[in-house]
Picture (cartoon, rainbow, N blue to C red):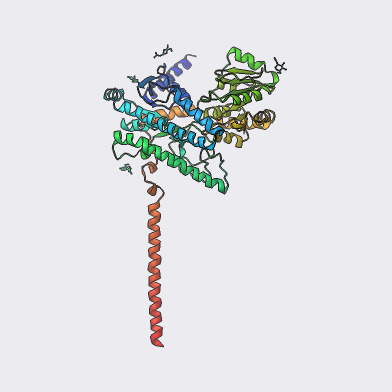
Length: 526
Ligand SMILES: *[C@@H]1O[C@H](CO)[C@@H](O)[C@H](O)[C@H]1NC(C)=O
Ligand SMILES: *[C@@H]1O[C@H](CO)[C@@H](O)[C@H](O)[C@H]1NC(C)=O
Ligand SMILES: *[C@@H]1O[C@H](CO)[C@@H](O)[C@H](O)[C@H]1NC(C)=O
Ligand SMILES: *[C@@H]1O[C@H](CO)[C@@H](O)[C@H](O)[C@H]1NC(C)=O
């Protein structure tokens, strides 16, 4: 008994001496990205690290006070606040529903471009606000940070990290607007579908043509954003020679929020660490009123529909269509919906403002998860092995759900028809009655959980690794520091082609001379 106490104290001491608290500077992104990063920050805090986050005074999701971080709130003019995000989502919904004539579709599209431009210039303003504040920079320098942790869907973190000469860890799925893999790893477009294409890893010729076109469009769009918006800030603070496109892939470790149970297999790099599903944890008991409601469902079980962080309000007739379809199910339904309560809500449906999604998904009575396809929800569905009926809206949502559908764990329905026909109801009924959906999700769940190290522990390990070794330069491939023609060996191919041509040309000339000489001799002899 005494010995065990002794050894556990020793173990505790050892662990503490191994991971003395570090100082971490965090540059987060707003919205649903923040929800999971918050979980990672809490875990870092509980391991004794001191966390400082950068936010604007008008941040929506990122709160100014929390027990587990210090917030640096910068006053800014442009801000990604509640109004901004709601507008972005509204424009997205309108565009997806495509109910508007094509002329106003173009209007919405230009509005989206404006919003995205505004977003990234707001990020640049935030970065400038910090770097221009000499007193603040002095205190930041005195704090002696060990690393910068940043979500590169906003390009500010890397500029700050380079300016402060600190190691950089990315907490990442997207970089600016594309799958971050495209920025760091070789990505053959023959079997890697571009997000937004809606293709799988087996593409026909025409699909590969579309995939290539979509890739070029995304590439140009990101290049314009990088060049027009981030490059001036980058050049101002890091010197005129600094190329944003080059430094943005220069991170020590990429904590990638995906894994290959979910995503299609593809080439990757030594400094990419897969932490998909790190936020998932075993279910806790439900609050009493919810447990009562869930138990009241009897043998039929429960359907949950937490429509994500962003989708707070749908058009009225669509909300009505969804409510009516849910009302026809024999199951009980828990629906998270913040808009005006639709008239057709059935007496089997509980409308809530918020639900403990993880605890519900882990409950044995849950039979179906109606998801919009955000990465968080999809990973939680895999972790708990719950089959999915998908109602994707925009961004990567369709592609996320497609990966589940491909593996037999989900059925996707177009959201634009929920108020027009029965396809939504039929899809839910199919997933509820056909046992293969649940079996497939359970299989994915077993695969996902069968890892030597839990994804969260992996994330913590690699962050502390970067602190201990002041970076991870030995894992960084040189590709980030190359021009495109060196990277693709265009110069070498040109050189070798020229050499071969030269040899061919010389041989040809030589043979021609020889031939001529022979001919002359023949003529002379005759
Ligand atoms: C923690 O970070 C804050 C800055 O946010 C800094 O003022 C403080 O000194 C740090 N604490 C330690 C123990 O380094
Ligand atoms: C901080 O949190 C407390 C409660 O947790 C709240 O009352 C307070 O308004 C918050 N904001 C600030 C700026 O202290
Ligand atoms: C719910 O509504 C259906 C049809 O509208 C009705 O048949 C049923 O009795 C109702 N159940 C309860 C518990 O009120
Ligand atoms: C690549 O890195 C080396 C140092 O490792 C540096 O001297 C060189 O200038 C870099 N090249 C480019 C194109 O940035």
